[in-house]
Image (tube, rainbow, N blue to C red; front, side, top):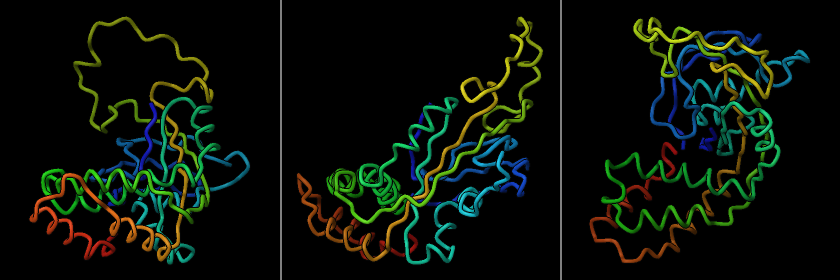
Amino acid sequence: MNKFFLISFLGIALFVSCTTGQGKNTFQLEENPTAPETSGAYTIEDYKNKANGGGIPDWVKIFLADGPRGVETLDAYKDRYVFIGRNEGNNFKALNQWAEGFSPDLDFPRLASIRIEARFRNAVPFPDTEYGSFYEELVRATSDAPWTGAVKEADFWLQLKYDSTRDETGGPVSANAQDTEQPPPPAPQENSPDNPSPRETWEFLILVTIDKALFSSQLNDLFLNLNPTPPPAKDQVTAANRVKEKFYEGF
């Protein structure tokens, strides 16, 4: 299963593991397309460079705890917007190929579009109705725009093993489900990147940043050149303008 997000930026509550990476955590998800969707009790079984004595980078810990906005509080990124590309699944090789092939030029437009769309979605309950054709045109324009200045700063992966007594949402497995008269499961095979246990998954994260002033100038140009068809109604234009006027507050 592959998902690609972004990682839009609201926040999730979670602990992040200690330097050994072996802490047990519980995700409490909020509406955040850029944050990991993983939920439930799990342990961090492995992570990039662990075998060589490496630790989990601060940006990963902060992202898991507070989303991309949290990463933006680091001194290194105080003048930059942070976007996180995320992919998860059980095929380590495929995920690694995705990370190695990630291109800021090709992949940043989708990250930018998701975050911009979220800014408009969070202001109203029904964006398609509230903004009319403006919203559809905004989605198209931000996804197709030739954004410049995005930089891939780093990437990281974690291997998570879920608590076998809980389901994927973090809830306990019911007694009925455990006691049904089913044949015993096949004997577990040795785990490997290509053969994880059913309760394990890999999370791949890519840190992308862009200068705030450069991003804002490109987005402002997009706003000026939007030409939705058919033209949105007057109240829809008013609703969109309200968001644009204060767009960068809390973005």
